[in-house]
Length: 110
Image (tube, rainbow, N blue to C red; front, side, top):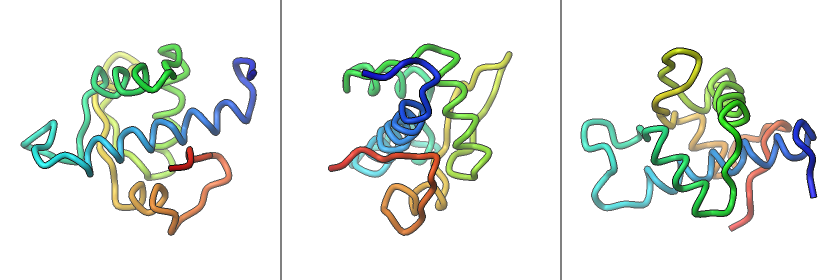
């Protein structure tokens, strides 16, 4: 359906990453990371995306997280060019909840 590097695919990937993080950190009664409930390790994010039928390549996922971090929706911890964890910011919550818009992010419905 979409080729790598396709702008629409990149927007959809960024939206899927934001939705996955939002659901993972906002929904559970017991947070995944008790020390910082808004933080998600890379492996958990990758597993959520995989379970949803979307597992981008490592460079694609890094690029999506970099974009989202640069926009202030996430804070990411980086080691050797790859993120190890992400933290959802209040700006990121606003984006997912629809009070903020970004032409570079296409959130999945639902």
